[in-house]
Image 1 (cartoon, rainbow, N blue to C red):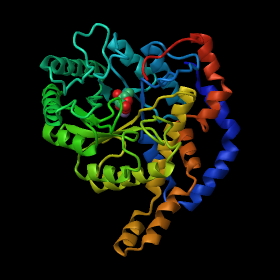
Image 2: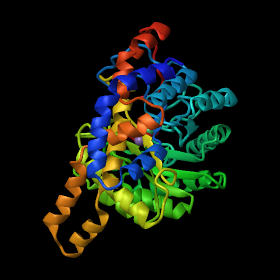
Image 3: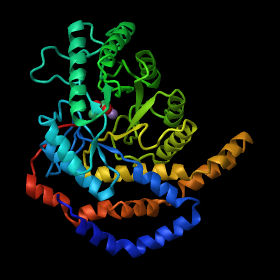
Image 4: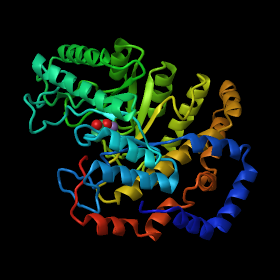
Length: 424
Ligand code: LRH
Ligand code: MN
């Protein structure tokens, strides 16, 4: 392990006095700091195995050095994140980018870092070198039954890997669609995709869930066969009770009201989970909370309210996953910032005076309602997050400790400048 307990303790010792001042102040002005700390401690975010290296765009890729080039090294890097913030306790694998050739060994290595396996991700948006039929014109929508069956078989194979690792959910994101009018028969594409998903659904183990991830555009630029929340909900409703929708924050058309979509999918009992990231234009896969932190807060406000309305367990009843790609930031620093932003939005949502808000809404007190929301959003709860980390044996300031210990330099020393991680 690159990081040991004494390094974390020494870091916390240095920051303790300043932290205590901040925590004593904020815990003195909010109603239930202990309740929020309990919820934060239970709340674990899954780290994507495909976002531990420098991604790139069609215009170029700039490696940061010391990237993990094996699944074992990826588990180590996620383990390091979890040591630093004790909020990254799960791994989301993408197949075939990260095939667990020795699943037992991988499961044991993950357990050493106290990591579980969250949703598995299939990939029928790229052609693998030994693949018989191409996905150029789609996979589950394809006019050729053979291509559709190939995609179904791949997803069933991914479920098997997941079962070996203790995962209990499969995320299906389809690049399927069209880039020109007339290219595709939308009804046939929908019915073919539904039929293919039904074949996968019937292969799902009893305790598993399938998440149907929607996306407005890219890589197709005229239509996407699972293009928005409505289409994803159509599939999930037609598939059955083990099927849910998955909300990737970057997969919406500009100015979509994602918090309203989230509240409705929760109300429909069909919200399965999230791919957290942030964006200004398209599927930019930027650091969570780096562009629209208020939207992230509003989404968590709907999540807390909607989950409490149904008595759901915040930590376990939905899939909390990051889906990002790092072009210019250090991947591990980026992920530390994303987990912090998610925990902050969740904590602020827990702080919302929901009784007062409900009264304001019943009295159409619009300004009053905004005051209640923004009072929570404008309360600096970072000392509460740090206190939760301190009590969990993590670092008061994870990013600061990552830099103090020159961990990226250590990784470059161990792995070299040129190693490339599979993924985006
Ligand atoms: C598609 C997507 C999907 C993944 C991929 C890595 O844009 O969000 O979740 O499979 O990114
Ligand atoms: Mn995604």
